[in-house]
Image (cartoon, rainbow, N blue to C red; front, side):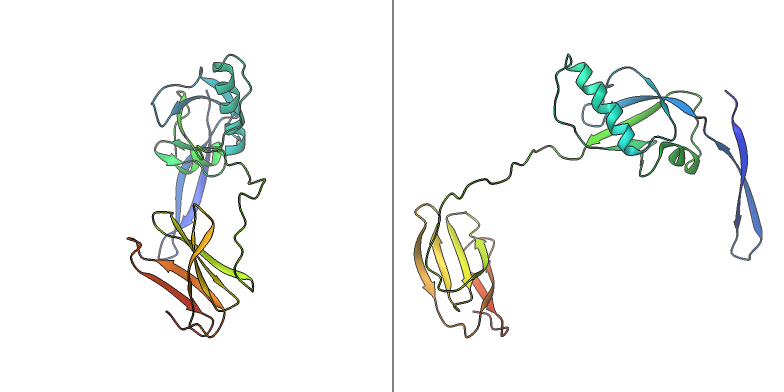
Amino acid sequence: MKKRQFEEKKEDENGAELKRSRYAPPATTIVQFISGETGEESGPPIDIPTSSATSQLESALNALVSESKDGEEGDVQEFSFYLAGLEITSSLSSHISLHNLSTETSLQITYHPLSMVNVRPVTRCADTMEGHEGPVLHLSFSPGGGELASGGGDMLVRFWDTTTSTTKAVGRGHKNHVLCTSWSPDGAVFASGDKNGEIR
């Protein structure tokens, strides 16, 4: 495989020109995808264009993964890719040139999934808690999740039982809209702040 050589010109701190010989990567290269979680190869080595961006690497890897699942169609997964221990952030050819990597052998590209959880949108209201006479401006759950504190435009802080959705207590004393509510990590102390900057 013949490499094309080119010179990269830079200047040192004194303004003197520095030349460094670099090689342009070939049009295509052989890559082997390796799971960063298990260390196992994902499918056979494949020949891909070196101009491939991370989106094309994702498409190729998703196709390999779906083939290994006997053609089952699954969700399209997003990945981060690493070559020589460094993340590929643009195209494969830019990464190869920037880090002066050899393409004489197959490139071992390690991948990591970017997200493992598919989040479904909330499509229904589980409960309604009535009590504030103005808009609710801030909510915070207690560390154990058993209580919910709400601060509102009615200058009140309400404490709710999350199991029964009823008011447990009402905090009065703020002279303006309650904009912030917060629990201590152990849930023993609670603080609220209003628009005037007063903390109770």
